[in-house]
Amino acid sequence: MVNTNKWLAAGVLCAAAAGAQAQVNQIKVWAAACANCHGTDGRAEPGAIALAGQSKNDLLQKLMDFKAGKRPATIMHQLAKGYTDEQLADIAGYFAAQKK
Image: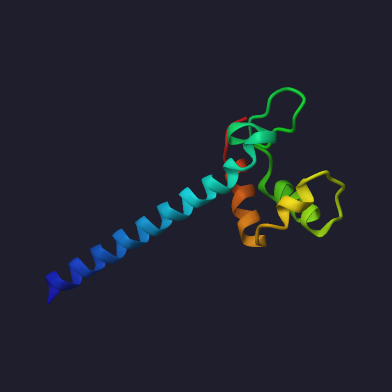
C-alpha cells in the first residue's frame, strides 16, 4: 500500500509538472504574437516599444487600458480584446521576466 501511494504521488507530481510546462509553453505562444511590433521576447528594435523587463503591473495596466478602449491605439485595443484578463496577466508576467 505504501509503494502504491508513493507511485500515485509521483504520478500526480509528474502530471502537475507537465501541466505547468504546457502553461509556460502556451504563454510563450501568446507572447510570440507580440514579436512583430515589440521584438523577440519583447526586445524591440530602436523606434519601437520594448516590453522586456518592464513592470508586470505597468504592462498589465496598459493592456487592460487597451482592452477597455481607455488608451489610444491603432491595433493594440483590438489585439487585447482577444485575450482574457488572466491571459493578459500571464503575458505581462512573461515580458516582465525577460531581460532588457
